[in-house]
Image (cartoon, rainbow, N blue to C red; front, side, top):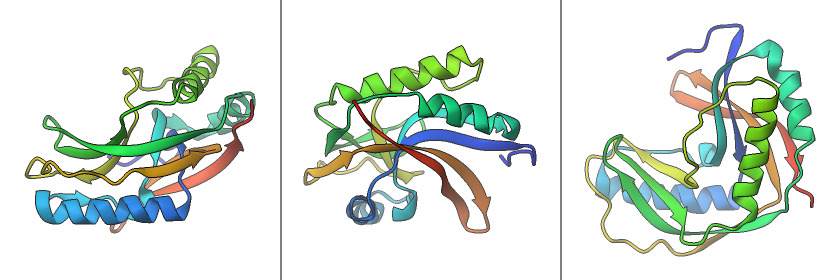
Length: 178
């Protein structure tokens, strides 16, 4: 679905360093051969914090202001497990242990968005990194070598439709500070 010209398809995310994107991207490509479907390009790999969906562009400054006010501790994610959601055929990477600072960050972003009257996806938060879409087979019992991802920033990201699928463009980033 294409966003209207006066809207942007937005989300807040933890955006990994390129080396983390490459490691997860390589794992996604390996899984693509085993499961079918479509691997997420390494440049698009991220951890969604809050999904906003189509949002009026006129509200971008308001979202930037509320994100600037969010404080949360930096944390490390140890991405070490693979999962599969049969209902939407998504293969994902996740964590066995969720660092306490992650749900705090999500909660503070959601609180700011709610206070500003901004709409967002209000599902229970499940930290995951999408690796494959439209997987035709369940991933084999494969061990994901633990990938350490230091998270020291979060970003406001726009999902833009391109000729070859979606591209994610970081609009602005904020440092995590205690």
